[in-house]
Image (cartoon, rainbow, N blue to C red; front, side, top):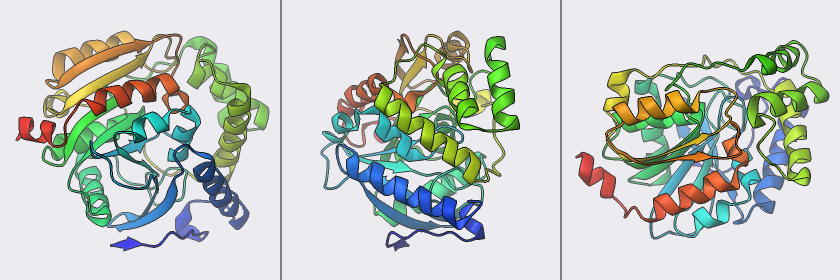
Length: 315
């Protein structure tokens, strides 16, 4: 099922033009080369189209971690956290572009229902030759991880949920609404930057100036060059959450502008039987992909989980 790294610019890619697709491939290669540890592109064929991921080299004592970004972001944004090296000391990491989201995977949307998500992840693991993994996701990527874990107790060992969608309904702060509306109307560079400030960073989460310049440019390019036809999912049912028995780390931002950290923590405490640790990051918004603190917390949590421990517990 595995295929060599290759990039497409046809209709199924999701990009609006060959130029946009070409820029995305070049940007992905640059991010992979500059990342510590260096990452390499790989494509795996699944029943939902080709899936692209950036993967670290070699074996790791504590197993594999797949990382999913939030809505509208390619998985390579995790590299901007500057802390992937800490996670890679114990695990082999893969930054996974979800089909239908910006990135180099197939542009046809992956349905955000539990069945299709589990089927897609099963194909991905088979293509990689991996028996079991831990999952780390931000926002909608965390919702995806929850739904995969609820259906795959034998193959998903542990979870790191960063500002997860689905625990509380999105409720953007009134001060952020103008930035969102202007961005949705016409995504200029200035409006993209204002959206990041208001709706992702919450005007509080620190990001180095050099990193921020790269984030702004990439976000602008993907916002204007990729047609996101996915249908979002905003609610996780109580039965779904109770089905997740894997050991879980929950990370929330103290000033998340999109999801209430208090409501998210309250529902997680009530329904996640495997909730092992929860942390409130401060000062912090919703951009966990850019957060070295979040990735370091994940590295510490996952490095103490022996391979297969959660699978045995939930089996």
